[in-house]
Figure 1: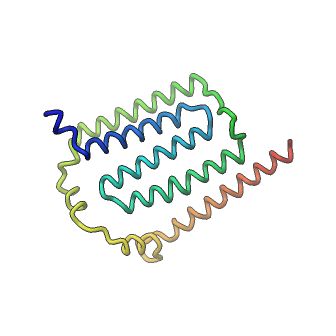
Figure 2: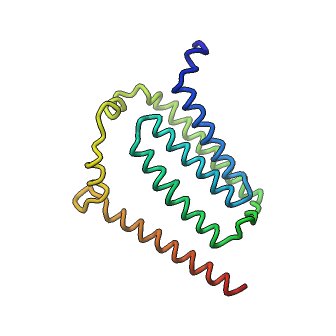
Figure 3: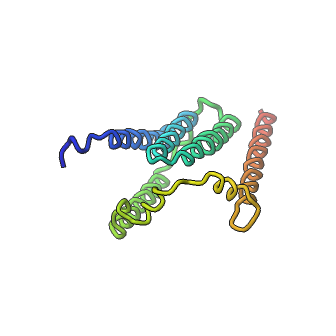
Length: 182
């Protein structure tokens, strides 16, 4: 394969987005400042949304940005601000925990590689072409997410909202108790 074939715009965009995702993920795990970790997580989530856009999945990119980068990450930041001091370093992790994390990461990598070698290349799968050729019906997605009939997901959607509200109230109660103790 020639270098010219590898330097297409699609490949360059994919490599750049992958580098942003990998760098953001690594930095969010390796940094000791909690707010920096949240920012690096934001970069990772935006990079994933960029990959969705690159694959022409505009709905997933918008959902990624609004739900994860917008909602969940803001919830993390509120929790950090309420529970910790902003400039405070995170706790140092023991060598035993680092060892278990390394074993879990290595096991996950082995599982992913074994799956790829066993099932081969998914890009040449004929079932994948059926999904990319058809147009996505947004009305059907909205009705499925917020409908109350069979195979519709309003109840889990509302339960998730109540759970997030309970987490916010719990964080406020904990922050209030810490302020009273000081």
